[in-house]
Image (cartoon, rainbow, N blue to C red; front, side, top):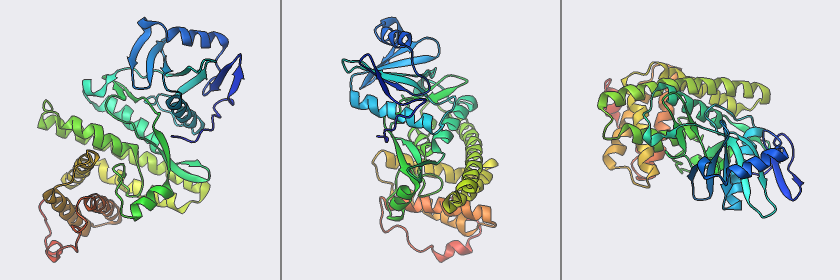
Length: 366
């Protein structure tokens, strides 16, 4: 899925018939032997996916033994690209090294992410914070082939996020793909809504994937009470505010280095979203939940109901018209663009001119 460069800490090389791919380190002969031995020791077995089996390798590492060489190369390439672009966080399964035996068996060694699949664990401020930080590192635009873009993980689901009470992390990156900002904006401008569209329309985000595919479903589990749902979502919005502020700072630094005007525009928008979410009022909370709810429906290949589409569009349009300063204007304009784009996937004719009564109504009801 990713462009294969395999730069790592040193280029790929062959030794005694083994193809060695150093990522963060160059393995010794003894480390290669220990890696293969671990993958044959059932006491070290962790789990098995479609393409590989996973085993513990010491205290801090895991080894994947692949049945599919193509998928092995995809994930090795992804972790190599993440290393080359300095994409790292305590919540990211960073790669160490990989090798292919003379018989064509592939092994990949990476950092161990401890915990259980998130569907078996309760979200709290601590583990949510770890996830949001990991998503921030993935979402920062990087420069590849003279184009800025984002590495989007197309295999993010609740089995691939491991968590404990105090930590969490994202595993499995074989479906990681670099999407340039130009490409994502071009798709958006053509009227096509990607379910990964971020708070800033035209810009894709792993954070949105997490919201619609994992967080929304968690919040709507039968055993989650209304008060627990409201408290956790409020905590998440505060973490999201920090995400937007850090993203704004990063983009501003990139702009100063590259003089790319689009990065400057994104920095301004992220800052506006950070300020609106820092102490969110009822309307902001409603808007954020609406975006998440609609994204979740679309991710399941279902259509938005006419009632929900009308309600969402009326609400954000009303808030946009009542914006009182530039920060509110930026935030509600982005919300309006997101809802417009999402609604058009189901109803091409639902987005009409704002009824004149909205402008007269100072307190529109949601």
